[in-house]
Length: 220
Image (cartoon, rainbow, N blue to C red; front, side, top):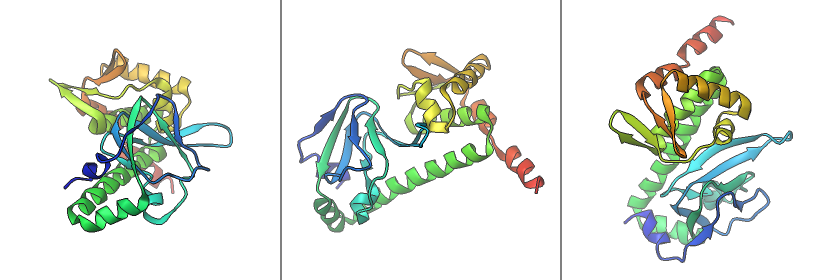
């Protein structure tokens, strides 16, 4: 039994690209399961700057904390593409987990994967410079959304410079400058609406923030 089997019994709801699915003040209608498309979970600062915390892909579900313990969402869920979403009540979701122990493991693995990715990004955001931050987000996206094409990796998610800026907490202008540097270094390239990682191994070396940590520790 898979978690998807619970949501396959419901009529899917469609959202258009850039449509807000949930706002901080909204009461979630239950647990949402992403059948198709991509959804971003983000916050907005008082100055209006956006920070994308998680990008959900098909097979992900949200909002997790609300489903488990009624914690408010506090942030926004927005369709990055046209999406198809299944919905069930919190009660049906919890009952399904209790009745299928193998699905509990699937849900736990999903949550831990997101947490690990978020913590990895925090490392880069704190310790890396702008160039390393941009390189790191491309490396993470290659792992989460990438498809190998020979020696290259195609990121199957249409990311704009603004999308990337929101993932690393930089301005769009700074992000564009750093992306150009990676392109000139022959590490990435644009292919239509998608980015291609031409040299993932060297991209990961560029993203390495260990030297930044060492120099920070030595300063104390």
